Image (tube, rainbow, N blue to C red; front, side):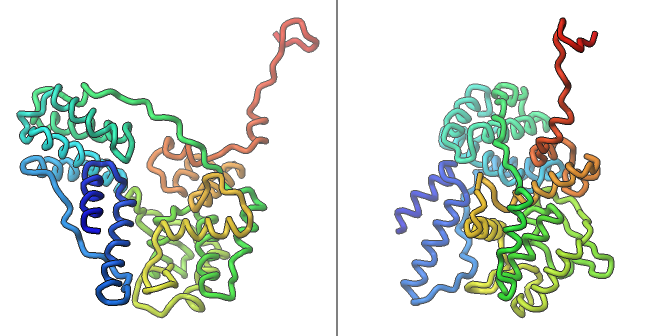
Length: 355
């Protein structure tokens, strides 16, 4: 097992294995070892594993880049950027390019070509993140030329559209959880909250008991993705569902998070588990997957606002987007709306010809 873990760790540090896959493997290996030694599994947090970092002074440059990017990048985007740049710097080390003097166009392009082709996050993500890092070095006066200009600007492929739920599909999903059970109360509360607020899964699972102002009927939180504060109205149906879960289903614990895991050790639910909840109810109610999960509830919320002629500016605020461009992939236009926007075609010489 040690040999396998060593190989997988090397693959992860080289960018050949995604972080989530490697972390899941680490958990499985830790639990197997724990079962072998003690005969039981605690499901607690696994020990840190001493993640490899670039050598000096490259590590310092990476830290300074990330500190500077904190002001302009969302938390998740920053994690992706740090991971990609780390892999790039490891590749530089592997070629014995260990100082800023080694950052030439030839050396940089050689290392980017070498690591980006097998980077688990994708070629486009790898090059984009390294370009940001190289531009940062030039802005700081650490390189004579802007080496980011030597890397190609890849045109990102158009993202596959992930549609929301139709009205009958949403009704079936919300009616499915057994609300006489604790898990059913939790599942229903999460789904109706997401459908009526448009919150991301990562924000729903991070909601704490103090996040809800019951007197003013507001939800107040800091968005995990953007780090921006957000206040939303708490709809009566969502409020009643959350209250029912807190009072009649939620385990008695000092944990502040509202939504908890009900199997094994009591702990906060994570975003992946929240998506698994939606997928479970979709399968049991025969709602087609179509690459949809928890995020489809958010898209359904945005689409319904659009269909009810809510302004783009207000939708942007409710979805917690920083700019209008971020909102475009989340909103679908219904067929009737497209028909209303369509212009009639007139051909010269036909009856009713308009000149």
